[in-house]
Length: 225
Length: 234
Image 1 (spheres, one colour):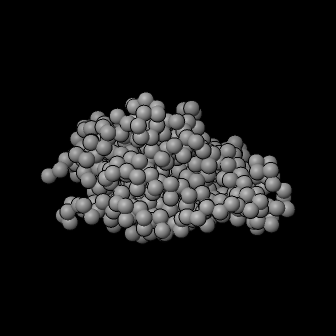
Image 2 (cartoon, rainbow over the protein chains, first blue to last red; image 1 turned 180 degrees about the horizontal axis):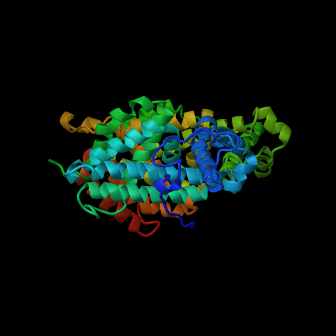
Image 3 (cartoon, chains in turn red, brown; image 1 turned 120 degrees about the vertical axis):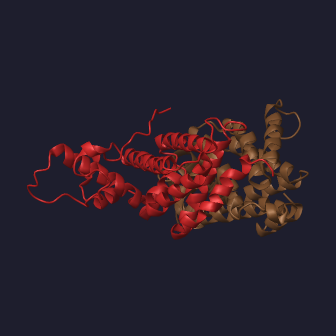
């Protein structure tokens, strides 16, 4: 199986002017801008990754092409192929980048809270805020991967394992109670649930789903009163 | 699942009760539809072609276009027919079992048997439908709702103060489908049996809480470990 790691692909301070949470400009200024070539290349790659989710949301897996992605990223198709071997490589990069951003948001929100018992609700709230802010990218990580994209299926398993680990920690223990594998199923179900809500056009209502999703994740593990 | 809920879902599926001999043309059409699902499940929706469907079914191009406007049309009609048949099959398995938990398990066992017997068709029905979108995806959503409604029948046995969230059926059906997609994407459909205890835990726990979840988990584990051919399911 393809070995993948969810790496930190978000821009860092040392990455240069396209980092530290600043919105990505649609394209660099034309002409002589004095920006180093490696930063220009990185900027193109980030634009392509961002464009992938949007192009998928518009055309779906059935219709999306490298041309759609390149046009959205305002680069040529040949530039696309300098960065990615094929469409699925770019989908994978977008998947991993989005999955990392989601996990970072949840971890940051949970680490800012004191009692571990509130971790679940806080994490879900942060996750839902991310999904509501980036529905196209979120749909990419919530929906099952198509047959052709085997590496994405592997990346999805890693994401689920990572989120399941967070879910276990939210209960105050690394391993949690009860049989193993249950938390992975709960995360699977949560992603499917969110996918269906985004698909139904309920993006604006996502933030309201926090208490319901918290109850859904909590109920199978909670002992009867 | 409660018999009346399953029966209602079955009626909604318009089950054909009178067996009639199919005409030769209907047999060809049926073969083309099966071919569309099989090919999509083998190579993916994006790479599927009418030519590959014809090779699988043995039909001629003219026959294909007499029956369908396009490959997309064929896939959509095939999807509708097969997802409804599978839905009826699962509900029938549920009706043959005792209580709600037993009927959920019987349906899952039937679903797993289908996944193992027809992995390519299962990939088309559960994975590639997300790629195809359109009419097929709408049928997928309808089937999900019907199965969810059958699962929800257990609410009648739960006290008002203990009712699970409204979205429980969506949540559970989504979790079951995701587990199936996972083994299909991995290319090892037999591994689906490993998920049975966890999915029973998810289903029973989401509606009835932890105690029922633990019981359902252990019961499913025993069933999974039983030698093939002994009793229910495998």
